[in-house]
Image 1: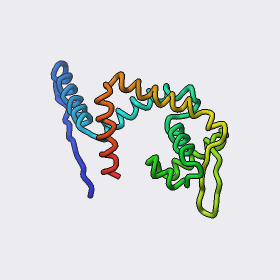
Image 2: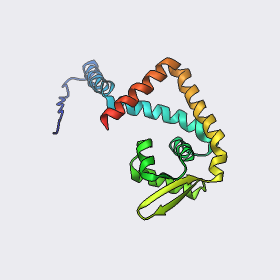
Image 3: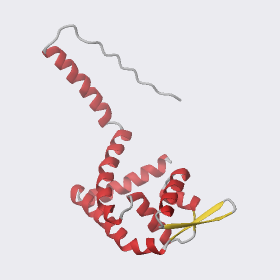
Image 4: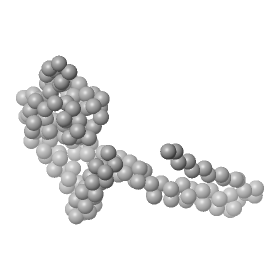
Length: 167
């Protein structure tokens, strides 16, 4: 099913304050559309959180997504890549790219048995764990400081629930 929205804007003939008013009204319509769009709002939230997360995880030298991948693998040594993709809600191709990069950095090792791949952290990655946990805590504290602890927890729960329903 395809839903299309068509907007027809006609430019006013006279210039000056009427043209400015016209532009303001058109911009307001667009802003209203964006402000009432869950896709746009969650993308905006993601970009803001990503900036904070990248800063928090910078001392560890890994991207936030990869840090969570490493912690999950350390908690479940030898986990199958398909299972890890489900846990992290990542496409298998994205996860494979992450694993390739972490393997190149000497943080993960992969074992293939037939068509199945399993991953484990290396000693180097295991030594990073305290710094990853500290970075994760910093992330929590940063967004809780901005949003408030209660709102942060409510948003986390509601967004997580909505994500599961939409999958």
